[in-house]
Each structure stands twice: as structure tokens, then as C-alpha cells.
Image (tube, rainbow, N blue to C red; front, top):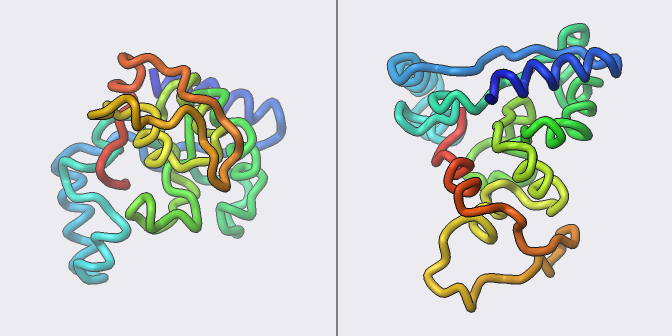
Length: 183
């Protein structure tokens, strides 16, 4: 489902003149372990903790995450590309969210990864995008089970875009539960 949605998203982007491709999608347990150990070896464990997931905790192991690169703008930072702007404006329509946005490191627990997109399905992706929240915040407020439903907020009232309570079903929420770690 995620792969099909990504193919559909890429085709739509090409139609709009934005070109990108998936650099990293699924990663096995063994490959994730090797990647984390290599990062830790060359950069230290604290760097690895902030920038990569240990084996068993990567969204890439779920098959729902993809890292994206711009096809014709490789000399630019990804955030300065047409591909990134297109993804910011359109990815939710295909079920993807930018998982680790800049300025939200204290919430997500990871360094910003503007190229890391997570498939959560169209309904959830559009609700997250409309809310102005990170996926972690949205999940905690609207998708995670609450011990006391009376304490669950009806809407977002802080500095975020106005959004009503989640229209997402319990089954959709369970399928979209965030991974504990980044890529």
C-alpha cells in the first residue's frame, strides 16, 4: 500500500514538474543494526541516538518510511528544492507526512529529517497536515488510547491551526501508530 501510494505521488509530482525518488525505503533488522553501529563508530553514540534508530525501532523496518532525494537539484539542500516544496504541499494527499520536521526535535526526539516521509494513510496524513502538529503530537492527542476519555481534548486550542477532534477510527489509529524512532 505504501509503495503504491509513493509511486502515485511520484507520478503526480512529475506531472507538476517536481522530480524526486526514494533513496531509502525498507531496511532489514540486520541492515539497520549495521547502519546504527557505523554511525555510532564514526560519530559517537550520542550522535547516533539523535540521528538514527537502533535495530527494531526504525520506521524503515516497517516498510512505511521513505527518504526522498530531488532528481535534478542535487546541488541544493533538500529543503531548498522544488521537490521538497511539492512534498510539503501535496504529500498528505497521498498518505505521507514529513515525519521529523525542523524545529520540532524536542517533540520527535530526533534531528530534523526533511527528506524522511512516513506513510500513515490519506485520512490521517491530511488530518495531521491540517492540524499543524507533528505526528507525535497528533498521535498523542487523537490516536492513542486515553485512560480517561473525559480528559481527551475536543480540539486543538494552542498555537496550532484549528482542527476538530480526529475523524480517524480506532482501526486506522492502530495501523498508523508511530514508531519510536527515526530512520
